[in-house]
Length: 485
View 1 (cartoon, rainbow, N blue to C red):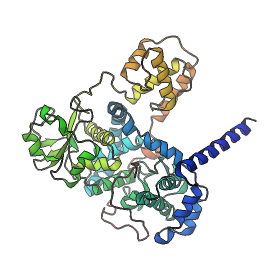
View 2: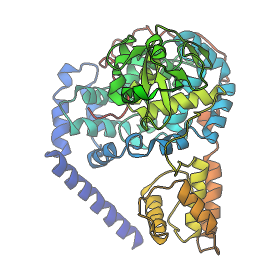
View 3: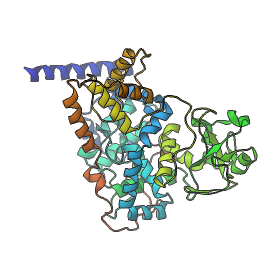
View 4: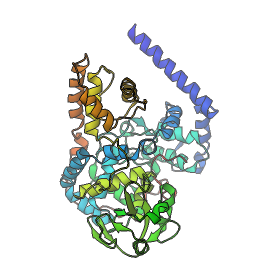
């Protein structure tokens, strides 16, 4: 009987999802699939039988994608929350260990592509927590659904057809081809068409496998960053002090697009010009000079980035920051990678505090908060250090009990308040112990991510090597991940 009700519930959910998707898009998924199949004559790389095989049982993910697009953490969380959980002590320690384990591969990658080890590893850490969280949605289903949400988008259709080609040519296996709701897959989360263009062999096997091979994922990432404009030896940015007269010079999101041309224009000025305007490094030393991440030259283009406004920390960012930003088109994301890479080199995350009296929590602190919520009777929670609707609901409940305005956000103030009110154990204590032990397991690297660079270094094909003749060629790289198009 339980199985019957579960089956009926699942059928009802699927039906509701399909009806909602149809209402949102104005057409059934089958109609969109037929439209895409009609484009096959203009896409000779993908065989009709390939198309039919992999779209026969496709799931309609349009409602999920539509909701997830509006809820991306890069744009929803306060930036101090986002950074506190993505450049925390745990990620730094694990990244440094990975750099040691993969030192031979990373040296070869830096030599071939001009991208330093800390930057490549920081992308790996922010994207999937070093391979631990890579997503479970079938890539074909996700890219098809995204294309059907906007059939006028050539980029979305290109990723869908590239996904089919990757399966057809055996570059990826169907059972491994899973990723985010946007269709990004692998340890460093590549969209299919971008992977088809930039895939790179990092472990000497003759193929590029970003699902199982850490060196391949790092090499492909470095090759892509180079294609986005990364320049060897230039820092992504430096923390600075900004005169009050430059408070309006803040360049957020698309404002720093002028960095892509690597020359002064718009909100981008040369380092020499910023220096003349009174901008100094955070330690009062001149802008021009060397640092842990590279050397700033007077002629380098730079833009001021003040994510929390003039009252918060400021960075002078370079064209290398713009290359990182184009990887996922969000300042919070690019800053997380830049700061994590600095920490992996042994430098400080930042010296200027965020303008808030309720700072963000690291993942360890957030797990502690979840454990306190469990102890207070919120038995539905998992202690995993991740934001989610159940944790947010429990936080709102506790905020209400404290007489606070319910926000669903777990910050330093709430953690301190719950610590001070620790009381008798609830019925959730056993669950909390199990969850805590599960967290410890989840925090250890999976076999695929921990395999290391056991094979000797080698010289794989250079970044300029052409793709196979049958490879679909995506447009010039404009960003690999989930930005709406």
